[in-house]
Image (cartoon, rainbow, N blue to C red; front, side, top):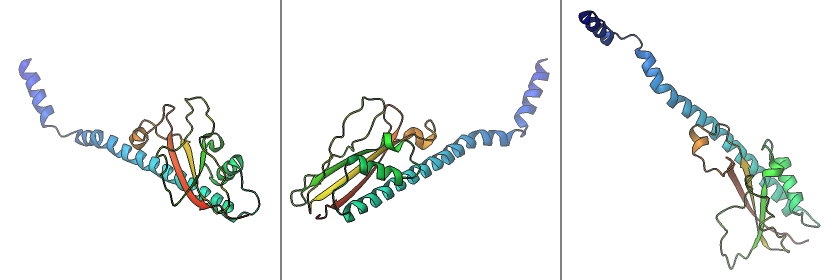
Length: 178
């Protein structure tokens, strides 16, 4: 019985059957993780470029517009209408507009004002319409759900407690005289 078991064990050790299965089991998770991270990165880039484009178009309208300067809700609806397929834009988009003095620059807060669905709703942090010829900074932050939140890039992006990551777009313009 012992001899029979040893001979079977030796034959099993010399056998090359299933070798490709082992290679597949080792390589498959890495390949799938890279593929899913690539898809995630593509959607992050697409959402961010759509947000940037919507901001640029809206700021251009503000710069070239005559009459009264658009207010917060109007700017937000213009950006969301132009942002394409950013889901829940009207509830996730947060705007800041700050008047700055270019001769006395003090910098911006590095943390953009973003929504967080796990917290209570808070009012707009800073939104002021400028006067004629004032330098204005408009910053938009939108929260996005990762497509693959447990794999690769989706799992390693900085997320809030609700599991969303932030996309921030900033634009600077001069308030034209009316």
